Image 1 (tube, rainbow, N blue to C red):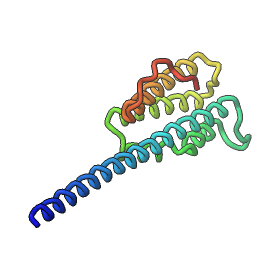
Image 2 (image 1 turned 45 degrees about the vertical axis):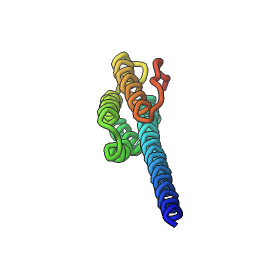
Image 3 (image 1 turned 30 degrees about the vertical axis):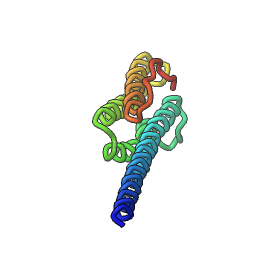
Image 4 (image 1 turned 120 degrees about the horizontal axis):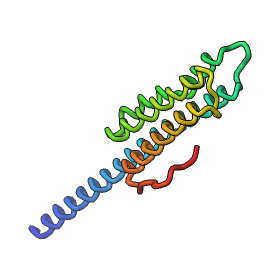
Length: 157
């Protein structure tokens, strides 16, 4: 009888340990998926803002609005600030720092466009390279946080 009780206790204990391990693994998988979704949303917002502002730099905006207003609207409409707030809530410090660097560089690019520069000007190109470098750093910070290897080469925008 003692061996039966002991066997039941051991069996119940191992089942509980197994359930706990499975629960922790599932929680880790969910957390990874949430981070990945927030990171992708932030990167998409940066890309959308960049593309919208590039269109403005090429003169593609309604004639009833100013270039300044159109550049600001392109940045604001992409939701970069909102996406960054989500990122700040869940990301590691290195990812947050890289994200702030990328959004700051993109704002400087926006300001070049507001000032009348287009994608062919040397100042615009220099600012675009700064943004591209920050974006590369952000991608690598995210990849590190997700446990993926580092990108050596920059991916063109």
